[in-house]
Length: 250
Image (cartoon, rainbow, N blue to C red; front, side, top):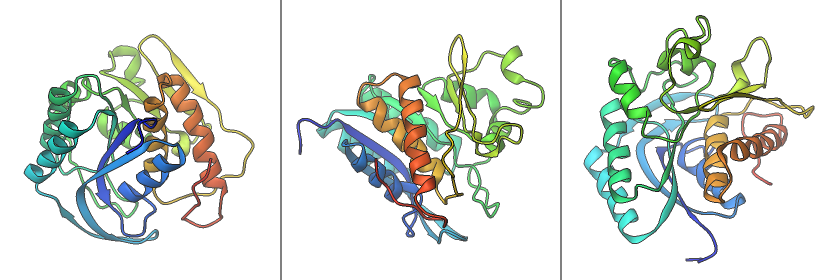
């Protein structure tokens, strides 16, 4: 494989329509000129319009896949998507950090499908914070942030509590400023404003954004640079068609 491209791994679900999950991630990796690997955490039956069914991959198989790749390649960044439990998330992160402590981790918390199919149920918030503290960036939308951190928006959770990691709060559901993302870093909050490009809703846009960020991190960009440049990429993707599926290009 090319010595000039960093290796990036996506650990997420397989969407046969290609709009989300590992197929969308791999398309994004290729456009960013990084070498992409993929491990499937679930097989799904879905289209860009409807989610029907999910079949989870056995965790031990996922872990063995991770071990095999990390023992054979220097993986710079791992992006994690859909998972069935916090236990699975914890095991996956622990395995990565044991094999390669320097690997950066981005978690795009896919908690529900657009048809309200629930994937991961948060029960123990102390465990959640402990697990999240081991990743480098969390990329929830406005609905997911309230599940992960109840009262995050309504009660301004971040003002009273120390956040366990960096968070990019995606602005697609931001009712007061649509399209404006908020990047919560250790000592500051940055607003990432949308451009004047016309953007259409897309199936799997969160997957594309997070895999773009992961690619940029692998290319030695800072978290701020990675998020800013990923916003440009996702806007091009959202602007590419007026349908729920888009075209990948830089």
